[in-house]
Length: 492
Image (tube, rainbow, N blue to C red):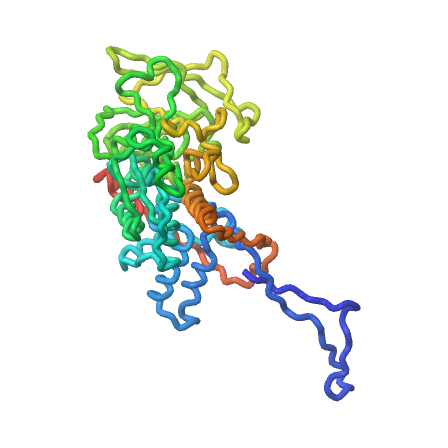
């Protein structure tokens, strides 16, 4: 928001005698000057969506004599300048933009995430199509490996520029972790399907059930294309490395959610224990409740350190999920190939580790047993690098430079195979990789983002703004959530 600054001439204020030369009225040389600043919401968004512009487009509709339908459509296209997934992100993004909203220090942050969902759904309902950046159809070919948020974001931004884009997906359906790692009650698959199809309708070719590195080598893909963007995600769940985890009723978090999201029948019994404190762990526990089981989350730190979205933790507690904190597994007990329980260690927090969180330290001699019918280890996940090992450096995952290129020429990467992050992080990686692929092919430099000061609440006359309490979207009652495993918690 532009702020008024005072511009003062040297020597301070001057005295004017007025038109008659004798009025004694003092005039000022001070003049208002618009100084553009960076809104904290847009600065905090990993993809730097134009949040302020979108909100003001809607807010000023009547002043500019526009209908709200016109304003909503304009807002939709503002989103599509940076992201092809407003309906998806309006449901699953943890909205760091709202955390930085200046109004949070007045009466509460603007419900940006809810507005994004509304505008995204408006675009779907009206079947609004993306706007191309050129009518030119280029001869250049780009391969995208993976149809998750990073891969489809890159495909979208390249297609807008007229490139021939082919997306290769190892699974039978598109979406990556959006489809196979997020439950339908948070992200209905028909919403995902529509936003992906909108990208495919731009001329993007899709090849499903095709594993790059196995069915087609990365080297052959590189030979056939001017550039390759690798966005394979992180679908492999990490193991606990404790005795007994190879039992048939012990799953990794990604495997458990993958099976459920594919529609497989998963028998979980009467008590599911989930180890971990991230979104995957919370999702697995809430799915267990929908499958009719008691659910317990076992986490080695305190709730303050849980990396899961706070709203999802609250939702899990509302649905009866028990969270057992400061505890970690030591050993899994098995009987005839099935896990029946485990020995757990009580923990306490010590000094901070490299992540900044306090390190969990065992309390000597303080152990306990826990019984269960199914165990889900949702401690972390990692990519399957089969076939692209030459892009890895040392113990790191795929390494990229400031232009999102790997150490292999013309091969770019982004998303969870570079570093585990948010959906919106992967979308940003795909967008920036597309920009730099275009730069590599055409020589057109990627425009630099304006280096503007972020305007904070202390820089504003916030008393000028009328106080309005935030309106939050209501979730369906808890008792209605278990009637259908796929029922969306936040209804349209």
